[in-house]
Image 1 (spheres, one colour):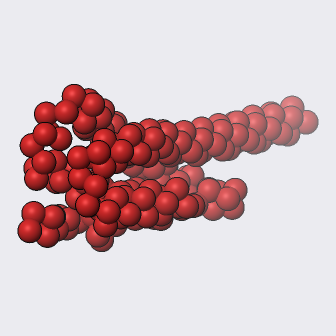
Image 2 (cartoon, rainbow, N blue to C red):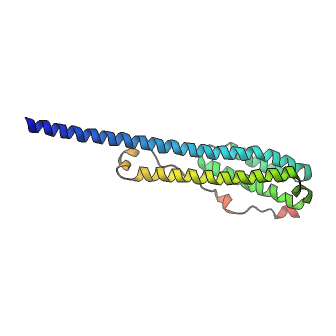
Length: 190
């Protein structure tokens, strides 16, 4: 009788440890998943900051280069594309469109020396450069969190139950195909 009680206690302890391990693993996955959402939110925050700066930059450039309407329209369309993005891939495409449009807008300053010396323009350009750095950092942080999460759900023993609990591989924030090429600004100087 004493041996059977010891065996039952042993089985109970093993089951209890297994349950604790499962709960700990689940909670870890929840934390990592929330970390991904927080990092993605930081990318959104920085992209919004950039989008808030763009109208001021456009208005400053418009004062000096009213005939560049095509560039201004491109910036507006790119901002709308980014604002309408609902997935990480769409966000990457919208971000690439905004980056390309901003490159064209900033290239205009080369054709207008008085714009290059305008204090408001220089300040906005500096703020935009700082924001671009923050966006790059936020993307890197997001991808690092996604990497840690994806590694976790693919490791044993988590791989056994991660899929059953609804934890799927997260997408990295990757540059869209258009972002890999430099924007053509040559026609701005003709």
